[in-house]
Image (cartoon, rainbow over all chains, first blue to last red; front, side, top):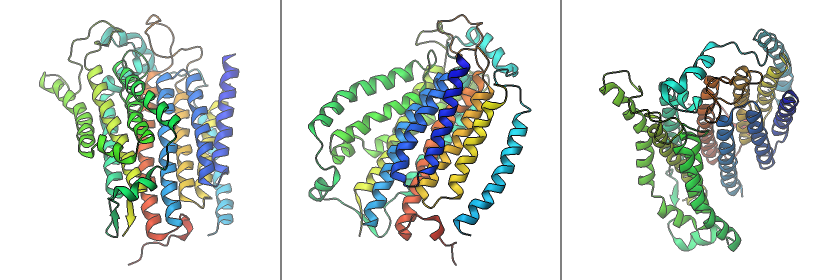
Length: 79
Length: 250
Length: 114
């Protein structure tokens, strides 16, 4: 049972990583990045590492924020 | 070299790297049968030695505390570098007039966002402090709690105008907080030196395992790391926001 | 379940690297870099896992129960936070580079002259 859960978690992480790379537009990639970060946190939980999962969840919050701020600054210059 | 040539070259290199890596990793012990002795030893003796129920926290701040001090410095230097890279350049100026800023800065925040944000600030600070303070007993600690704490000024920015955010988080105070937080780690380590044993040794009283005031120097280090990380992240955010909202081409 | 989990770390590493190599936008490249970084976290945690072990927090369970390795978790923990600050630095550099040259395409950047 645990092995099945772990296998599903690992497969999901691999799938979302592919999604992150395939999306070329950064604005769309941020969404994929959020999904990837969450699936990574779930994988860490399944591997019995609650501290690391907590870190990853909070970091996946700060990360898209900075990217979006950069993107908004870049777009304004391009206009 | 255009993209297609690069992709083709990468396909060759990537395939050979894949084969080599998988062949190398196949030599490791099978998944689930890790044979390293230190983890097992630590799990058995740690509660008796340090009275901290979270083995991971005691490894991070006590058994391998010197490593963590080094990583703290990486954080510190990265924040400093962000502030330096994003400084006002010669051909830019900082928009000072409130009138021009008001229309551009935030637009109209809806009342729902305002109410929800104001209701969330208190619990965010409380949750951050809780995670920091109980870092040695349950999952959590300085790093995670510091990040949760740093979300409170962010919510402040979301519900208010950028200028109120700026006034409530003066940069000098943030700098001070970050320096104290990260320097505090080293100062606590020096206590060990002064007491005659090694740097970063656990010299404060150990207490009952599971309570907040246990495990010697661990809660104190957690607090200082939490402060340092929170101030650092808010500083980074501050620099980015300033770039986006306040700095214009001259 | 012998060696298959470790293939995930290799897959993450290579797919992130592929994204970096064939990227045409700096911000996209930075996010692929974070995918590469996460492959190290996954590998560390997978190496330290013990079958039927629980989390190494002994608040409610007696001190001798079988738990996973805490040392690798300690390594990964600080790693994640440091990773996000270094990414912030990279984004700041990209921002300033864009101000100078007006483009986000890595191919348009000539080597330094003079």
